[in-house]
Length: 296
Image 1 (spheres, helix red, strand yellow):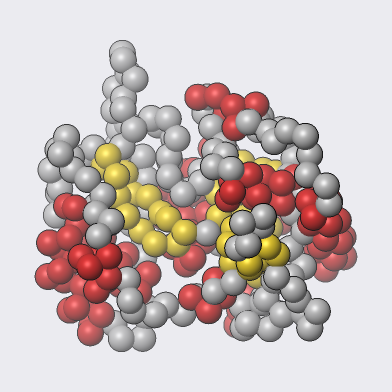
Image 2 (tube, helix red, strand yellow):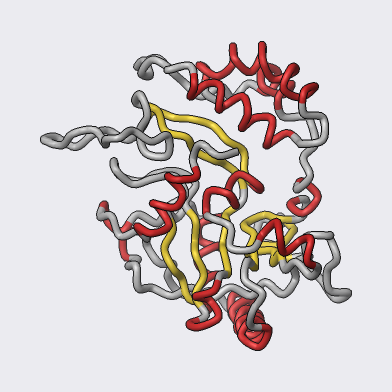
């Protein structure tokens, strides 16, 4: 948690929690964050740091959240089904996802892909049949993934809502909405403005507002949407901006065959998707996120 947020969290979080008792930790954090943005915050100082001391931040992290249970056995990411119009396409995708998981479980490749070598056209396959739906119902034969260090859990958990009430929560959600459901909000100084360039205008908290950028931490988010029915690709969502001008919640499409491999390398090898410093993210999704940034 950024140090400049601590005074506001200390003074406002207990009140917000009491005022909205039926929500949860992530939504309460977002409400306090909204107050931060509404306060016309000053630009970040060079001395600003992220506070890691558990004794300081634990009062704001110990409350439960409605989606915590879904994440208890996740060590990598969640793949959320957000379109329910083509069951055949979903089943075909799920089968390919299982194949990708099986391939990852086999002998490791000689070399892992470098972040800088990835292009926006690269495909990603992920086998996530082991996931639970939004009510927590999973396959009876669900088993845990484990990495070489002994960490157990799902590298990727599929969230496939099965009833209409759950469909309402997830149908056609934006990248930002998904981040806010499953990740924790924070801020950081926006990336540096390149020499000769101007700051974005109008300002937006997902890119640069008063020198700050809203970011998220937690599980990786993959989104199966209407386009997935057609080509088997999913959106891979970024939790913070990359170079200046890119935005928190940016995404690019990855094919199902590469999802597990990408997730493994992001989780255990620290791989980052950066396109070699070029902006190749999906602009339409960025625009949608920025339009929703002030909506809780």
